[in-house]
Amino acid sequence: MEKPISLKSAERKAFSLTFEDGLWDIMLGLVVMIFAVAPLLAEPLGDFWSSMIFLPIWAAAAWIVKLLKKKAVEPRVGRVNLGLPRKKRLFRLNIVFLVTLTLTFVSGFLALLEIGAAVQWWVVLNAAAALILFSVAAYVLQQNRFYIYGGLVSLAPIVGEWLWSQYQVSHHGYPVTFGLASAVIILTGIARFILFLRAYQIPEEVQS
Image 1 (cartoon, rainbow, N blue to C red):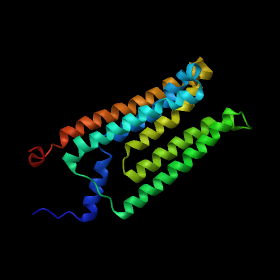
Image 2 (tube, one colour; image 1 turned 120 degrees about the vertical axis):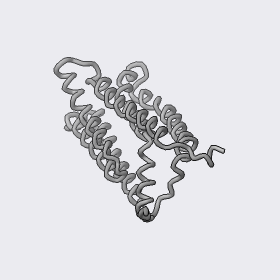
Image 3 (tube, rainbow, N blue to C red; image 1 turned 30 degrees about the vertical axis):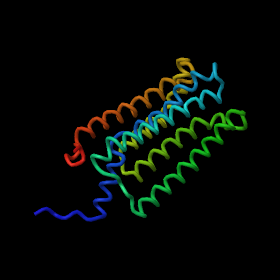
């Protein structure tokens, strides 16, 4: 006789499935990609537009993710309605994201103006911010692979600066290091999405 599944366990499984389809991995990879491509666009477009050009790309990607969630994911696993405790955890995660990204933005702005020691500390702060963001996300969302993503992204600026100082790799090595990090994350997301579609078939009553 099968042991009945508690409501808490069912919610935990549904919550985990929300982030196992790989779609959010692809979105994260696209966000990381800006640090690889923006330096290459800075000269023809300027620092501002080399970053702003990604906004429509992210908007299109978010729309595609939402569409795939509705058309491909929900028919297989249903729609997840989170309880109050998990909503609170996600809210705290958003607060951590907001605070960390704000501090990173301020440090980047000070580095751009070459104020004090901000230039020297900017790389370290960005590496720490990436590690904090991905680690907190991994813990809250219960997705251990995010720890690996955090390691890749946090090492990218450090290794990039080393490539620039030792081998004069252009743009501080960011197109190489962040490009590799984003490629790993995006390809992982695509692979997980394909495996997800194969593992969960659409029930016959939904197809009919």
